[in-house]
Image (cartoon, rainbow, N blue to C red; front, side, top):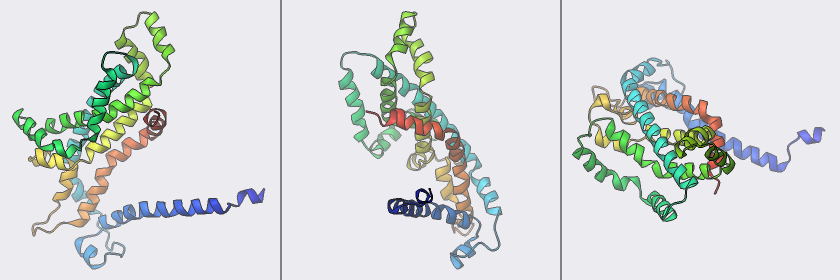
Length: 277
C-alpha cells in the first residue's frame, strides 16, 4: 500500500516538468503584480526588491484611465462575438445537415481563407470602412471582428453539428418541424459547449486586439483597452510603469470572470466538437 503512494521515476520526471512549467508561467504574472505596486523610482532603482512603500493608488490611477476603454472593449467584443456565433452556427448547420450542389467546393473555398493573414486585409478594410463612414466608431471594430472569425467558427460548428444524432432531426421532421425549428429547438440546445468555446475564443481574440483599433479609432472616448493601456505617460513624457502594470491586471478581469464561468463548457466543447474530424 505504501509502495503505491510513492511516485515512481516516470511520475517524478513528469511532476518536475510540470513544476518547471508552472513556475515559468506564473513568475511573470507574480512579478507583474509586484511591479504594479511600485512607482518609477522603485522600479528603476530597486527592480528586484519588494514594493516599499506599497502604491495601492496605482490601481485607482489605472482604473481612472481605462474604465471607459474597458467598457468599449467589452461592448464591441460582445456584439461582434454574438454576431459571429449567430452567422457561423447557421452556416455550420447548413453545411453539416444539408446536401446541395457545390457544397464541398464552397466549404473548401471558405476554409482556404484561413491561409490569408488578417494583416493583409487591414488596409482594404480601412478603405472600405472609410467609404462607409464608419471610421472612428465602434462599428469599425464590430463588423470586421464579426466577419474575421467566421471561418474558424464555421469549422467548429460544422464539425459539432455533423456529429449530432440524426434520429433527433428525423423525429422532428416527422412531427412537421421546419428546418429553422430543427435548428433552434434541437441543434442549439445541444450545442451549449461549442457555443461557449467559440465565444471564449472570439472574445479573447477581439478583446486583446491592438493594431486595428489603433488604425480605425482616434477618439480617446471610443478607444479600446489594448490601446489605452499604452498611454500612461506623465507630464514629462515618461511612462508611469506602476499604473501601467496595474492597468494590465485590471484589464484582464473581464476575461477572467467570463472564462471562470465558461471553463467547463470550453473544455467540453473542444473535446466534443473542436478536435473531432
